[in-house]
Structures are given as structure tokens and as C-alpha cells.
Amino acid sequence: MKILLTGSTGQVGYELARSLQGIGEVVAVDRQVMDLSDLDQVRDVIRREKPQLIVNPAAYTAVDKAESEPALAHRVNAEAPGLMAQEARLLGAAMVHYSTDYVFDGSQPSARVEDDATGPLNVYGASKLAGEQAIAAAGIPHLIFRTSWVYGMRGKNFLLTMLRLAKERDELRVVADQHGAPTWSRTIADTTALVLSQAHAGGREWWVQNSGVYHLSAQGQTTWFEFTQAIVAAAGLECRVLPITSAEYPVPAQRPRYSVMSSERLMARFCHLPDWKDALHLCME
Ligand SMILES: NC(=O)C1=CN([C@@H]2O[C@H](COP(=O)(O)OP(=O)(O)OC[C@H]3O[C@@H](n4cnc5c(N)ncnc54)[C@H](OP(=O)(O)O)[C@@H]3O)[C@@H](O)[C@H]2O)C=CC1
Ligand SMILES: Cc1cn([C@H]2C[C@H](O)[C@@H](COP(=O)(O)OP(=O)(O)O[C@H]3O[C@@H](C)C(=O)[C@@H](O)[C@H]3O)O2)c(=O)[nH]c1=O
Ligand SMILES: [Mg+2]
Image 1 (cartoon, rainbow, N blue to C red):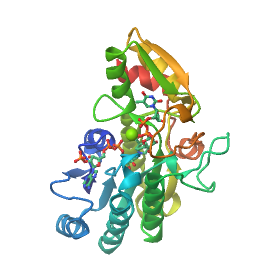
Image 2 (cartoon, rainbow, N blue to C red; image 1 turned 45 degrees about the vertical axis):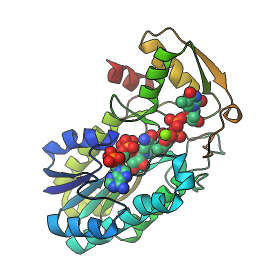
Image 3 (cartoon, rainbow, N blue to C red; image 1 turned 30 degrees about the vertical axis):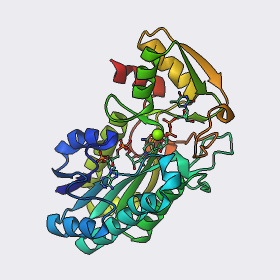
Image 4 (tube, rainbow, N blue to C red; image 1 turned 180 degrees about the vertical axis):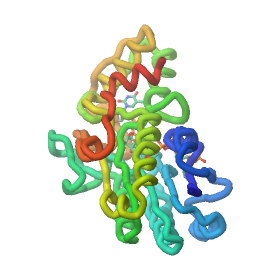
């Protein structure tokens, strides 16, 4: 099976390039080869490569910057994935895509399930929701994995930012009123590969039964403040971590207060997901 993989310089894409090796022939395209803001180029690359599966972890992920670049965020996160899905339909191909907890408004203090009402609070979340909808509308075999608070040992992420700041400063002030589940990039890639190996074995009928949206987050929940405490402790760093409110950390984009998602649907069908603390320790080892 020929797999077209986008975003292989990103956190999840980098891990997928490794995890998908066992599933098929992976053709990884970066921004130089396929710029998602250039829709003609997206179409040309797909028509040239003719993949049987498109895996799309590439995205505009700069949450605050998106507030001042809504058109670009929408093109990369909604129009480009929508076009990929249209092209997949012409090829008879399937698509795997990633979305976010930020499609929810986070006003309810209970874990969101896949069919719960969405209501993004920021441009990034709205653009990701539009991407989900464009893929679903194409009527192709597809999997959309909504994940959250992604970290890993490479790329730009909260874990690496906090490790750097904890070495530079005596004290970190971190918001303690936003709840979510930090998820290791490798958990996302390995779970994707496991699900795809089942899909491969199950053929067309598998996709009919299983296409749709799945929440894919580590188990348990925390706050950015507690996540930072766990990071600093695991790294053995000497740095005080102080809880603050979102109002004390002004940023352009509003974030959901409670963006915990239930991954029960995925776990009931496919595999278990680790607790966020266990995954953090494995990652940091
Ligand atoms: N990061 C997070 O906390 C979360 C991420 N997600 C979702 O998971 C998926 C993977 O995210 P993650 O790996 O963390 O993202 P990263 O920010 O680590 O990587 C994004 C990737 O997309 C690429 N990209 C961005 N813009 C373009 C463009 N115009 N053309 C081509 N490639 C582009 C980047 O390339 P380059 O290196 O050239 O910039 C990079 O490879 C995304 O769909 C994201 O929305 C969901 C929840 C949380
Ligand atoms: C650096 C720093 C951040 N913060 C706050 C800001 C913010 O509310 C929270 C997290 O900061 P970040 O900017 O890393 O998080 P953010 O970019 O909002 O992370 C999101 O990214 C997108 C792509 C997603 O899809 C989401 O699931 C989520 O992971 O921590 C502090 O309180 N103190 C600090 O020193
Ligand atoms: Mg960010």
C-alpha cells in the first residue's frame, strides 16, 4: 500500500514516519514538496503520487498567531484537508487526519465524547473543525483522530518549552484553570499504526464499519500547572512552579477551560491508551 504522509517534520508526523513503516510504502512530503497553503500544489502532488492512503498530521498549529492569520489557518487546516479528501475520492483512497480538543468550548466539566456539540473558542479550533467537516463531507473511508496537548522530545511543544524555562528561571507561573490530557506524539503514531494494520487486514468492509471521528488522548487529566510540576519533578530540576489563572496570563487566543475528552470509543474498538503520567515518564526516559 502506498501511503502519502504530510508534516513529517512535525511532532506527530516525525513519529508516524517511523510507525507507518510496517504498514506500507511511505512517501513523506514536507512543506517544500507540498505546501498546504498552495492548493494547486496539493492537488498536483496527490495526482502524481496516487496514494492508496493519505495520512495528514500537517497543520497550522500556532494557536495565538492564528488569531491574526485566520485565512492562512483556514486554508491549511480546512481547505487543504478538504481538497485531499476530494482527491482521495477520485483515487478510491482512504484518509487519516488529526484534529484537536480545541474544537470544543470546554464549558462543561465532564469528558467530551465524539458526538458532543462542538463550539471552538478560537481561530485555530474553528479551522480544525472545518477541516473535519470537509473530510466527512467527501464521503471517503476516513479516520479523524482528535487528540490534545501534544508533546514529545522533538519539535515545538509545552514539555520542551518548560524544560528550557525551568533551567533559565527560578520560578514558573503556569495556568491552573485549564484542564486537559497531555498526549505523547509517539502514543498517537503507534495507535494510528495499530488501527491501520487492522484496517489493512479488514479491507473495504472495515472502513464501512469504522470510518469516523475518534478521540485519542492519554488517560487521566491534569492542568498545565500540574503538567509543569510533573515535568520539573521528572527532570529533577530546581524551579518553583506557581499556579495562576488564565486572566493572569494574557494571550491573543482564548483557550477552553475544560478540554478533557473521553477516548472510550477508540479503546473499546481498538486498543488501550496509557495514563498521561506513565507516558510522560516513558517519554522523558
Ligand atoms: N500540537 C498540539 O498540541 C496538538 C496538535 N493537534 C493536531 O495534531 C496534528 C499534528 O500536530 P503536531 O505534530 O503537534 O504539529 P507540529 O506543529 O509539530 O507540526 C506541524 C507540521 O505541519 C507542517 N506544516 C505547517 N504548515 C504547513 C504548510 N503550509 N504546508 C506544509 N506543511 C505545513 C509543519 O511543517 P514545518 O516544519 O515546515 O513548519 C510540521 O511538519 C495536527 O493536525 C494538529 O492540529 C491536536 C491537538 C494538540
Ligand atoms: C509558556 C507558558 C504558557 N502558559 C500557558 C499558556 C496556555 O494557556 C497554556 C499552554 O500553552 P501553549 O501555548 O503551549 O498551549 P497551546 O498552544 O494552547 O496548546 C494547544 O495547541 C494546539 C495545537 C492544540 O491542538 C491543543 O490541544 C493544545 O495542545 O500554558 C503559562 O501559563 N505559563 C507559561 O510560562
Ligand atoms: Mg502552542
